[in-house]
Image (cartoon, rainbow, N blue to C red; front, side):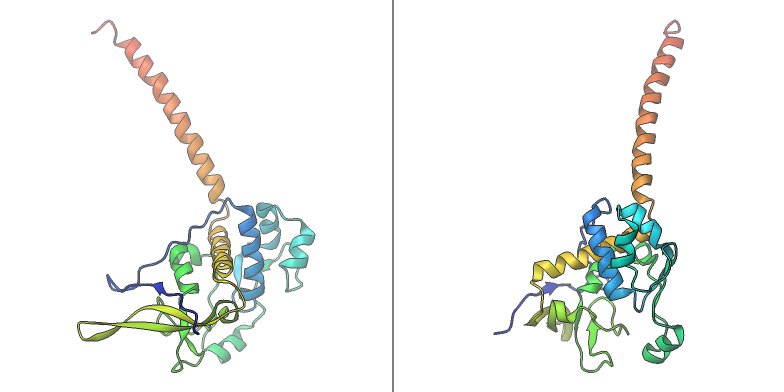
Length: 233
């Protein structure tokens, strides 16, 4: 029997609404797992040229050996940027265009969009890759996670006399349980969100400190104002 697991992505407002990624860039274990997923599944085609392996090690609490053994499949130096194995020439020949750099994809698209995109592939025999995507129609990227997620088909409903894509459903189980696969994708999105702005955790903590300082300063300023004007009132 086919395994049914429908993801609703109802059309509206000119597109599909995104599903919440529920990421947390302060979760070091999630970021470490996401970095490994990125290295194994993404780095062969996509670069992250604004990020260096040694910076990832520092921020994610990983040793140099951890990074070089588990993330650096390119065999480059520890201080090198995360550059794809695939050459520009081969990429253009195979896909018609060079796969985009992913350093800032989470900042430009958003974590929720990425999560919806990575879980939104379905089979489409009319496409060269054999897949299409609910949120990025006619995308040229194949579904690199189909073995883990399973095979999904599109689900349509009739609206105003037209067949509208409303979601997907699994028709053949993948190698991973649904919950495990979902965690893997969220970890990957979390890592992409981190590399989009490695200083975001520090920026947020600094912002809290500034707000606390302003609150204290306001208290002193108000007390001073009361003291200066006490004789006037």
